Length: 442
Image 1 (spheres, rainbow, N blue to C red):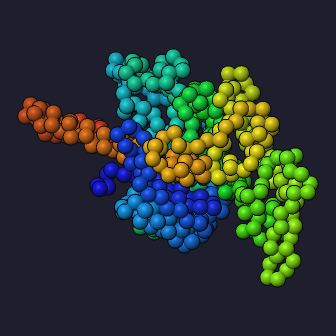
Image 2 (image 1 turned 60 degrees about the vertical axis):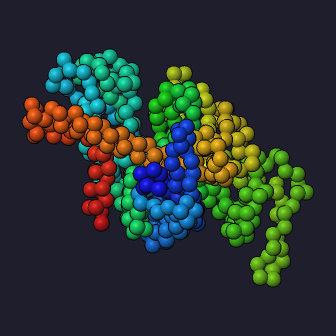
Image 3 (image 1 turned 60 degrees about the horizontal axis):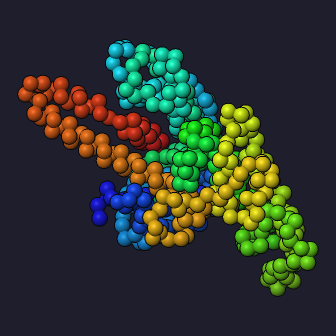
């Protein structure tokens, strides 16, 4: 199989690292060719804090995926999260030299690239510039200005910013693991890609991805991303609380949470008890399930309330900005019993659990369709999309070459090359920017 046929998403999480190899089948669905999963060591709250351990965890997951698929992995798309991520809104405009010509892709590129030049705080770098809506000569609420006439092109942008050092560290880990970095994507955006439908994005929806070390939030309205945030708490703090509250070791606390944990204390009877073996000849410990769910409930409420503050900051209570589709929960933490009911109780918004199976081919492994893998599937989708863009641009370039060969006699060699040069896409420019950035980081 050729390298071009498949792509790879790599989710570097706090508790696990997942590598997924996949390709698009003839129906536009994603066929999973291989997966690899390893315990994540060296990542704390979504940020790499031990390079050596992270590299070995990445290699382990990648090797497993390669063996599973019988393929060699070259380039990967990676997700980024962590409490250093912040988002801001920015408006910018360009004045076009000739308003008699229609607005084209290059004008949009120029406007986006202008935003990348924004001066950030020391040590920060822009990760994404996401256009919201455009204005042409004062006419507002335009979703796609290409093909319109106008002299002044304006847009509102959602800009996602992260710490340079964290981005460099991820790049370093990928390089040292013997891989190429294809792209870096914000994790909540990747998860949204995998579990949300277009109707939900139009109606207004908040995606809450509860991971091991962070809880990621992405809010969509009218099909456009409106707000993103990363909250530095996740499933790990719940485990930590159980460990402290019940005086047991972390491994036992994690098992207790998964097997018997519930976010709603009312449903456990007082006499329901679970016995945990003592350490090295010590007496076993008895823990009531009511107590266990009280500990979990207290921490989960805190996480949900922080997320709800972010949803209010976006302006959900304003009638025009109301999120009609409510909340979608995904990530490993969303599998906690009765979490859906608790979220509905606290926020008063409709809630469902998001599974990434909508975009997967029918014969996919059931395990991959679990909310645990939402981010990894989203990153794979991003990788495939980039692959398609590159192929399209390549195809276009070949077609242009053929047309130009015929015209070259009349047009002159140098001139024809210029036409082709203009065909460079925003994605190519971004990739080049990123590669330069990472090379300088070495």
